Amino acid sequence: MRSCILFFLLLITAGSLSAQNVDTDSLKNKPKKENFADDWAALTKYQQENAALLPPKRKEKRVVFLGSSIFEFWKQKDPKYFNNGRYLDRGISGQISPQLLIRFRQDVINLKPKVVIILAGSNDIAGNTGHVTLEKIMDNIKSMAELAKLHHIKVILCKYLPVYQYPWNKSVPAAEQIMALNELIVAYAKQKHFTVLDYWTPLVDERNGQRAELTVDGVHPNVDGYKIMETVTDAAIKKALKSRN
Image (cartoon, rainbow, N blue to C red; front, top):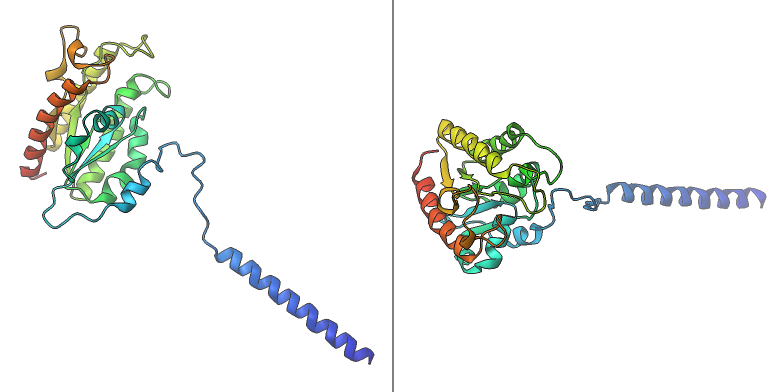
């Protein structure tokens, strides 16, 4: 009788241990959810839009606009410009160039565009996250351009819009820094035979800031400013699509 009881207890113990092992194994194999609590580059902002986006059709000439508030506010102020189904706005207000670089695979490469328009550097200059050198900004722009070329995406690099003074950081010599950055961007684009999109020239005033009638705050364009940008953007896209690079 005693031996039967011992045998029964051993069976129960073995079964319990087996169940624990199964539970442990299932927990190990269970896929972990990504934690975006510290989503520095705001990867979640366009995740749903990207997931809902169908692959481009065979002859579709998809274009991604990668930048910060200039691009994000553009779609808000003139949504019709982006209603053609080909232009994808992936601007996020306040972002600096390393954040754009982090987003580049998700918000550009994976969308399989024919062209990417890269507008970067102003928030870096403004000191949104501390001091950043022009050389570091260019390193990030170059990395994005090289990634695009590797994936057969035509590159358009933008001369940044003129800014005389940042309202939130008046100590920065904005006009001087943006002009210097634009020179570096143009030189690099010429070296690599990338298309240059000049937003600076049609918007600039005598102080090397934005023309008062075309801006809301000296940094961001109003609707009239965006209309001018649309004209030069469309021309640059046509040029890029015809280029060999």
